[in-house]
Length: 383
View 1: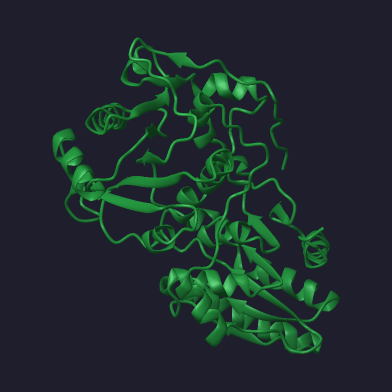
View 2 (view 1 turned 180 degrees about the vertical axis):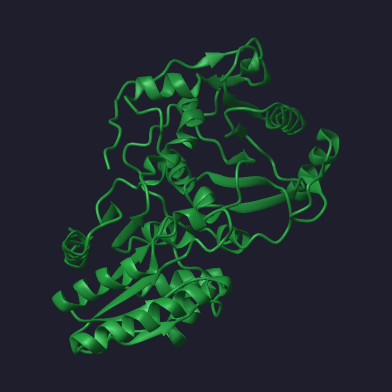
């Protein structure tokens, strides 16, 4: 998959009549987001958090995420993220998941919830990470005024810059100045607004460390490979109705893993949510039959539905290689720094991580899959 280039050029800041001096060493920054509560969508933002900490090591980063409902699985993972000092998930709609009509809370009600969640937290900067929408613009302005902070946002459309003390130009301007394609890498999105602070991505990767809960599970239950074998984790994933279109054929996984096993023996562990266990079971049965016919014995352990998201991260961290579709565990493995092969059913350029130790293939043939997997198994992240 081809990727976009990069440029060292910086965009000019846009200052409004409300301009204030940016602090040279802010103590507390609030990031306001309302895009998606998918694991990958939120974890992608961690590269921006790391870049902020690289600029201001002492700063406390606070994330305020407007969600449609309570109880998203990603809350557990992001709530304990090592780069964040606090996380505030604010439910912005009334109703239950799946209902066609759900009433959104008013700006006043949402603002009140945010204020209550933040408590007496002092803020230096309030950053609206969203490029569009009046909701986060109004909230950013109100929060900043209430806390005597500087508001930062994106001048995506005419007049939008007047909601902020300091703003960055539009997504389009950012792409052009950085020589990026229209289908911009999802990780790059938060860096549009950070350009207003002079913060560039400069190759920063997404980040994740195991939480205390994840570390405890790894110490107590984390698998290790049998002597002379590698430990491979496969996440077939894409089990929700909207993601099934991204799931490759099970038989294709089987043939590719058989090809890899012929090159290097491994113990195989299957990740996944409880509703993905049926696909894992189908894969394990087909693989066992093909392995047996070829005279091989590949141990398979299915963890689907047994682990929390933090324990799932620990399972990924045990692996010599993670193979995944374009779903949450793919981004988790990349963020953990585990050698990762992502299997795409079709080209999805914004989802591609372009960094060492990660390979993305579209419907690979067995020889292509095996070659890429062997390269990743030999990858030395310390080098």
